[in-house]
Length: 58
Image 1 (tube, helix red, strand yellow):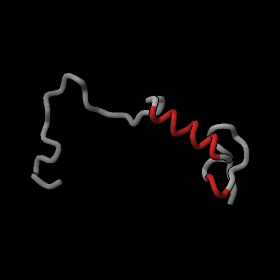
Image 2 (cartoon, helix red, strand yellow):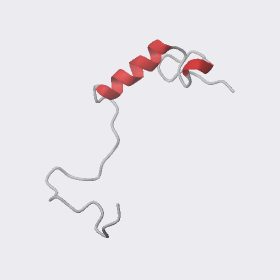
Image 3 (cartoon, one colour):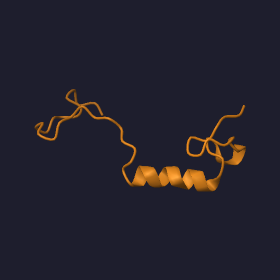
């Protein structure tokens, strides 16, 4: 099964999947570290601290 690298669009290499090379894997990791990728949150900055697990399970 092959695909394309999400960074440069070249064919992927098995050793670096889903990337084509270590370089593209490092570029992707750097984007995460720099905050270029974000997971959406529905919490607002001004929300009061809420118990994350109100039922005590967690």
